[in-house]
Image: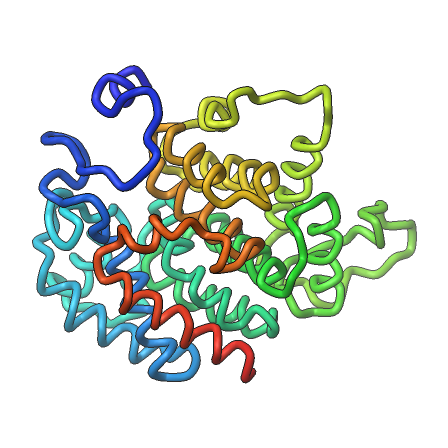
Length: 328
């Protein structure tokens, strides 16, 4: 954190050139990281295919991303390649394995950073959302806990796109989807998370994932926000409470907390995510998706859109994806 303040000042409030020797060095403010590059590939695939087409997405990865990589961390679009993408590149390019045998054990949010587009596309169809996000995630990350937390994030985002808020009730809505079989999580509790009673049968839908706990985190974070006895002040210090590293179990609680705290204030949510340091790129992506779904495009500061390279193209893709959601 001291290095962040030394290099960038007390408060970052807009796109900023990366410093030499730091992640993404050589890029200019507003250019896409590799996470953004891959998200754009998936956005394009969803829009042109009118839904998730795994073969089409994989072909785009083969043709448009992998030729730009060499297997090292500081390479490729964005001047940095994440662990899971390096693993997939080695298996796909060097070992010539088929897609489906390319996943690794990285515990990051990399899959969330692209599948958030799938969550938007299938926000009104949670069963399809869960299947598509699961299938896309295991292309690069195969750990069941990571996959379950990735699907859970997508399910939360889908609820917010529908018009729900990131509040104490969000997990109850998600658990209702588990009970009716729309989300593939195993749950033995009864309504309101009451314990099973003697003689209750094992649920008929055991689900792919061991427990629904990943669906409960967002409500706990929202309750922490509304509890007057819990104070994280200033809010950017949430990164120090839950941890600054890249791992998904550090990132998600902080993202849920900031998005619940600033559910009507996109600018504050993003800036506190960024100024928390550490893996602030991923934190800002997650917070941006959750908060953007709650406030809508019109309440995103115009400078955040105008400052993006390829802003018109990216905005067009987003609007086309939204129109497909409206059309089912």
